[in-house]
Image 1 (tube, rainbow, N blue to C red):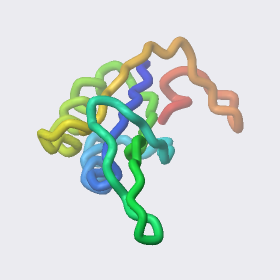
Image 2: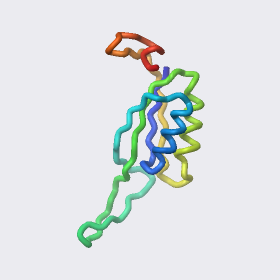
Image 3: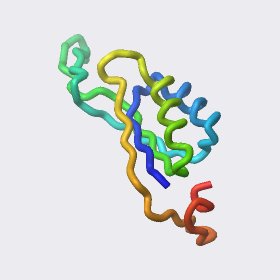
Image 4: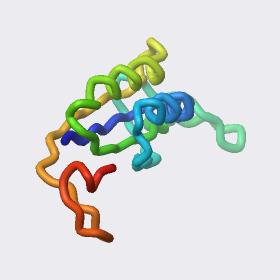
Length: 113
């Protein structure tokens, strides 16, 4: 099993979510985050005064999947999250040793389905 963690623009979430659903992903954790990287800050306005917004709003998606689904999920994220602009995000993949469903005490693949 692998944990896929991806950081994307909020504007592409709905299309990424639909693409993941087509790949059989129905369990997903979504967190609103803000980050800074190569995408530079923007100038915002508050009560007529400009201010620098250093952090850009992003969404972090986390899912644990079977090894066999990893490449298809990566391809779906790359296709639907990419705009070609700086700040499109990142994908991180981690090994998962074990998964346990608390309610039923099921372990392994069955616990993530």
